[in-house]
View 1: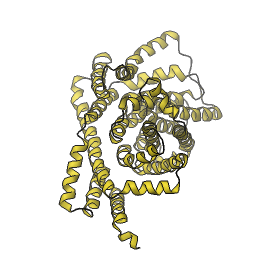
View 2: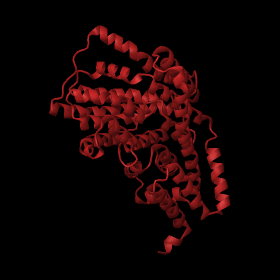
View 3: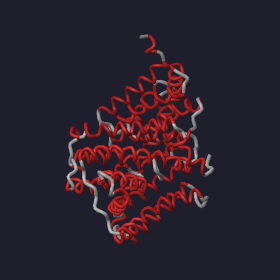
View 4: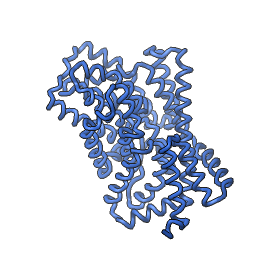
Length: 439
């Protein structure tokens, strides 16, 4: 047991145990990260010095122009959530996939993909789309547990389709990777994850003989499309402006706020001026949580670097194998386990500095790795005990968690298979950035 008293091993163990114990007793994860950092840092430096450096790291970690995009996209998402977007996207989705067996399930997936990409939130998609679709699916004869499983596992696909706050966080943590390139790289993987869920829906729907939607008259279809176009235009405006060099990703976030304000308040008129203070306050609270997580995670990264944790993990992985295929499989397994217990943002902040140098050293593109990492951690949003999309999906569907385990298994399998495709076929992530000359 002499190695346990060695400083090289002692500090990482103290940090890990402190974090696990704090999370286990119910301390919010941001505070758990901060406290674990100070506790571990005290064994390397004095308490006063560690506290001072941690505070400095929180301040410097947030001193980035790119981070301005996060509060703006959060506010744009909040306006979208309250602006009557969900039912318009659901109606539009019925036009696209309403004639496929299990059509209501496919509509749920398509609406989640579009709403999640527009709002930037899997939880918002699960609540808004799932809350609307659950009664409709139940009335059509769908098993409520099946419907809830579809909603929960499909809402995460929108997180890869830009604009995405998690990709902005990764870009910052990875050392200034182009946000625009990451945004463009997320399209095909996000669509792939959504299609994998739809494939499972199709197979199960054929076995259970779930109904197909009636054909929508052409005049009604035109009206539905016309109503949905303003919502879908946000993604076109944001990405078109970035690709055209009209504005940066950060400036695009401000444009998104202006557009969603006009859309929700002026065009759709679903949001009243009197509703704005509440919406802004909700956005401020969400932004504060995200930015505080970023700040304390930068502090933990400093402590981990000082304790040589990235170097130790690097040595452990490379000594096991120097084959990129094997290394990526191990990293994926580690991240899948981490995603069960940790939210996406802190996981990206903490583990990007650890794993990115390893895979880049073996020849992997950092943009490809970022998409792989986010796709992996998205799956954790569907798993207990911290799966926010899981609990929201249960809440809006009224289905108990224990009744969802079996129905969700085939969807988990499909998502993991999609993850393997994203991991081992780089062109899925890099095709569009290369096509547009962004790398």
